[in-house]
Image (cartoon, rainbow, N blue to C red; front, top):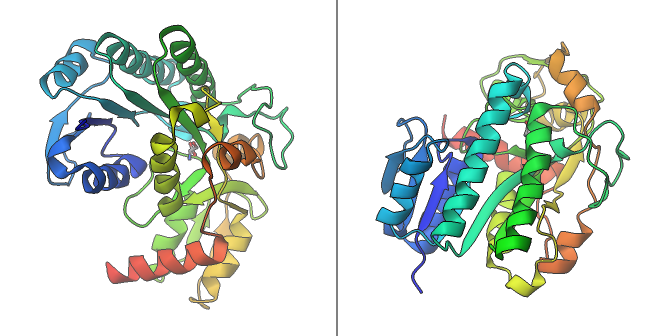
Length: 312
Ligand code: SER
């Protein structure tokens, strides 16, 4: 059967790269990229979509005979704290619209991204477990934890094939993040390449789980390609790549840019990061569908610098 793919949030950090990957996998004509903003720069089908608008979403699903939806649109952790009620409204309304449209129009598969933000200050920080009790500290985390329950509910009640990953902070050279607590780990590379000093909004020792874009995209595709019977978790899978703190990343970049300078000026995002895990136990993903990250801190840094230099 020929799949027809819909992506929301295609202009975002992950959405942009995932759209290109899905175009490569399914063919440019079989992917409909959508975003709230029309300034998204790729070829192929694009439609402006506010995914809180059910009727518009439904009309696109009907018009293109959509068989899979990747719902990437969301307000992230740091931005979310500035407008909590709006963040809840947007993150929940768009997800429920996607689940409902998928149920009504018998969409085959749905992907919903969750996050390490679902864990809160109560969670064990090292190798945080899949079944850790969730008590998130941000409204973004609250919306993702609720979203995981909605996904699980739609699977139980309607057998909707919805699958999800708890992404760590995503680092890539293709696109810029916006409004997250882990964004520093992308911004730092842009400063280093431009020979400028970097002001870090997290303290030197803030250890967080991160993943390189290539691994994040591969994990998404591998999860969505896995046989249905292998998927034992219908809330969201823990996913790990690497863990490092700003000082470790800085020192790694200094191997290539010995003059590179950093100063630390923690802001409100420090309080968010302090409630998140240091590292993640992703053994469920490994056992169920064979997940294994390829990039560690060294390989990620090398690839980021090489690719950003090519764009200079
Ligand atoms: N990278 C995201 C953020 O910082 C976490 O999901 O908000």
